[in-house]
Image 1 (cartoon, one colour):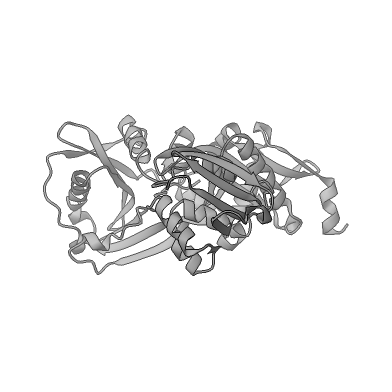
Image 2 (cartoon, rainbow, N blue to C red):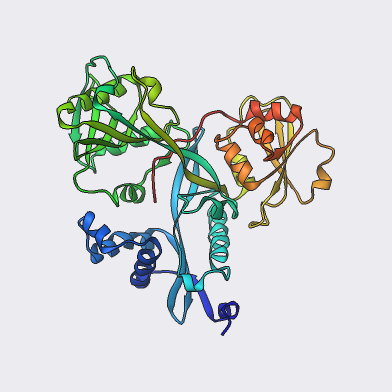
Length: 412
């Protein structure tokens, strides 16, 4: 049988708890989780299956089956994300996998389209994922929205910080103070994931038991920052460090300094989009930046109605002429009518019907997503040919689109 004809024999359906064995096998094959990997995390096959079973219980997982064998799948986590202090319902995409013998016949494209339809019905107007291939997801409407910055510095390059009145305490990974502190941080930080139990489970899933959590408490015993770290082979490894004020930052670095006899260097990850080097007296350190999370607006009309535009001119009308090859409901023109700070979105089928508007912006779904999430500014996007708009329209966009890059430290 020709490969192109096999699709007629396939069944598309939602996975349930009875499919956990096949779900686990496809994940292990696609992501090459070996016995060596499991040994490193002190896991066995049954523990890996048990750790992934909650996905089928808490997520929406779709798959293609051939003669009752799972051959392609995609999972949707129900999540929330802070976009400029507005909490959006978000879909976290994970578990994207297809056996190679079934590749090239559009199975994943169909699964993506179906899962995005589900998101639209659930009012989840934005989707996020960690890309295994940036070109692959760009071709399907996703774009980069945040970076991961990694750094390495010698022990003598540590920041010199003043003493603080609070103190650090090591806590359990399920500490109520840790959970509450991250929630407070997330609700005031653009781009941050609001972690529920499922998100916290994913946060810890591939970590070793030796990781330590320490919280900085101020003089009033209020948690104001935390660090997740590991000491390994004379290296102090920082997984994540967050703080609500400079006092907490000083307190955490002072705590790291107290370990100085135990390490020769510090390595870590920074998701704040601010260089660590600038904060150091000796800033000649190794620091790299790489794309981390990609996102996609699932339903433009829903997304825009919730979006916190700023400094809106009186009676502004702005038209986004959007190209989206995957989702037909986004492949339209969206006219934003602002009147006394109230927004009405008019959906127009054809660009020819928008010629009377002063402010027209032509762009694809990827560019609209990265612009509204703050990864790249409108003027820069026009300079590199990613959108078309007049000088006057660019000036309006620069005024009304909030500034600030997304902080996203999670992986799922």
